[in-house]
Length: 295
Image 1 (tube, rainbow, N blue to C red):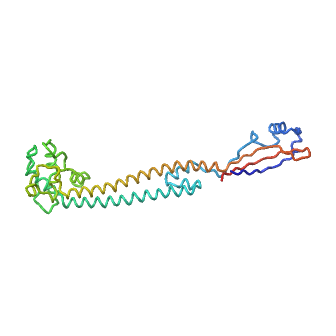
Image 2: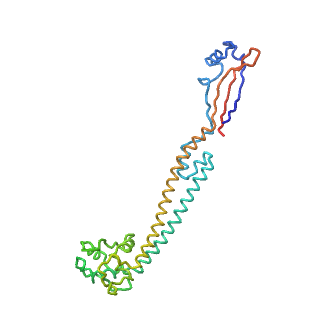
Image 3: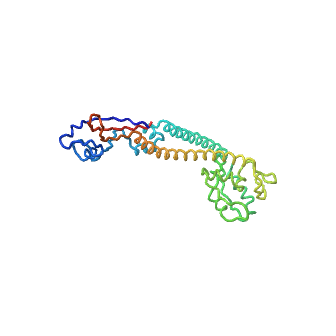
């Protein structure tokens, strides 16, 4: 830290109208302090206002809105660039992985719509459901094959049969088509494997019974679950990136307040009076301005 001294000299004769100086520095300084001859604001030392001070609140608010803006405001350009770069990286990551997640979701949902049939699921229940505790009803199936499978069945009828306790399996209800849970459950629980178009029973027929063997899962179901898992992984990255965005805003806002407050401390000034011996028995009252700059 460097200090610059500016001395403004006032002749002693300026004080001649009241009390003459004694030559004793301590006594004369006390004398000067008690007089109004030399203007001062109530004390020997005073700190003038600095018109270049910045608002810490403004620094914090700017960084809360745009990370790095408060640091730029307080002239901390390196930190400003770091916070802003982190923001760009996190936002870019969130956008990219959200796009990947949406693309993968569309992919596995379209695959499910083509290869999983609610009609096949209820036909299997009609043929084999009685073995699992509750006699199956006669499900209503629309004969119009031009409709999509989920449009040909009554989901309320399916759920009514799935609801009672069964001796084994059928622990979940089929959600309405289009729900996120619909696409998750048909690839997660063994009871829904009967709707996949590669399923065949142990007798080799489409609606044959496998004895509800939970270990007998068609490879098609495993592949579908893996693709759905990839979509979830992409969305998990979006969650991480979003958390980083929030944290970056908060940390940058706190640093914006701190950086602006430190900026205000970098330049300080003090003004005061002191007596200086100029030789020949004469004393001079010096107004001293000290400017401290932290480099």
